[in-house]
Image 1 (tube, rainbow, N blue to C red):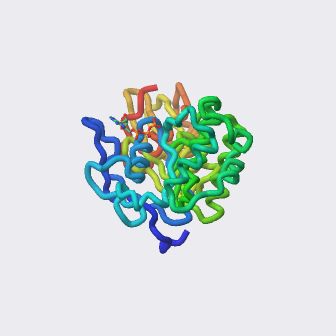
Image 2: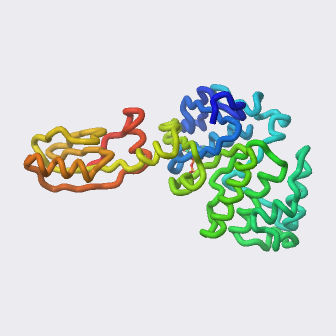
Image 3: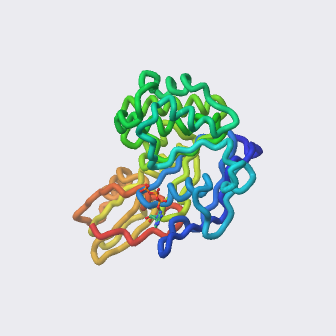
Length: 300
Ligand SMILES: Nc1ncnc2c1ncn2[C@@H]1O[C@H](COP(=O)(O)OP(=O)(O)OP(=O)(O)O)[C@@H](O)[C@H]1O
């Protein structure tokens, strides 16, 4: 992706509060034409808030959001935007094909309905009333609707929630096809594996802040962080050590390579006991790596 590609959407120093809760905290990012970006983060990280701000459904408390160079709250800017929110209510008495036609009618350019339905494996259900669809079928339709107006940018908030493995793969293929045809995508997920299947660029968000914005490979490397806990008076120099904290006699070590750390520890001949190796949450790993603001390592 060249840096000169057109900016489709951006957030600059955006903060969004809901009463006492700071959902987004001084966040900045740019989405450029042709990117397929995964927005990864745990529950409550601020993913939906960011997506909703980019789509003009919410206003920032401070900072600036742009969509196609203007204010996302201006309907003219949303003409080339497709979106699937985290939760959608679809009219239960409309038939699938009617629903697609209804949504497409709001846009200057429209996808060919039957092609769209085939792409999302909904062709056989075109005459079915939405009230008669399964949860997974409704979700697929909600995602398909994001593509009904031939968008240039699509925002998908947890698109595969509630889908079985086969439906998930079909949806990934549809997103890849759209991207292959030059479309730009931002999709959110809790799962690195989902992001891995699709995205080239990964933005990790936690507690309202961007913790990492990097290539998939770089983020995957960071996700391997482990916590090693042991009792020892002195420690030798250890490889891959990201953080070290003492809690009484116990030492808590965050490391990118727990195996090598333990090998070096054993070879050093230092006396230690009570060795434990624990996974860290992705959020803790990124906080430790990127901001130095990690919470104290919890006692084991
Ligand atoms: N309308 C609202 N009113 C009050 N608090 C809100 C509102 N919307 C979001 N929040 C709070 O803002 C924070 C970020 O929420 P957001 O939905 O953006 O996170 P998320 O990363 O999408 O989470 P999830 O993965 O659970 O969907 C959370 O603490 C949430 O409770």
